[in-house]
Image 1 (cartoon, rainbow, N blue to C red):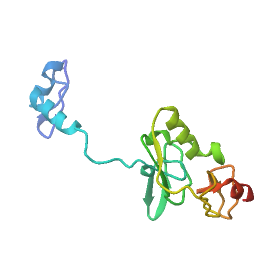
Image 2: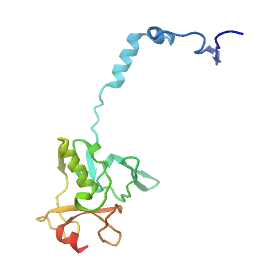
Image 3: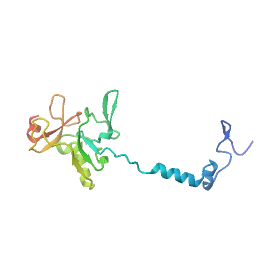
Image 4: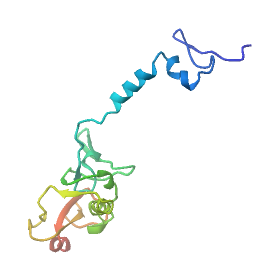
Length: 173
């Protein structure tokens, strides 16, 4: 009985018939070191495509939203967000900061928490919409992100329906 096992696949001898040193690993495949380095350089060049830096009002990157059979799915990480409509509201230098969960309105909303994380990390954020209340349309009042129910009431959890509301409308709903 031989001391080493040899495996054959489609007429080729595969590993197990003798050890190949790390220096000869590429040569054993018929590839030169120079060729491997050249191909690796070509494949690891930074692409010229621009990443989508937009963030939805739900507080997660637009790139984390996909549509399957006409149904919108927002999956920023292992968790699912119930977001029902992509509404980009800002652009962020680093969208990885927008992976938080909505636990309520204002400072507990994923959008606010993501902006805070960006500022803490020294990253820039820029609004791409005019900051006006989604309910009354006022643009001279401060607005905060609020999760609202289908009936228009404010909620303390992610509902999938998020809006930027002024303080007066936030209290009214």
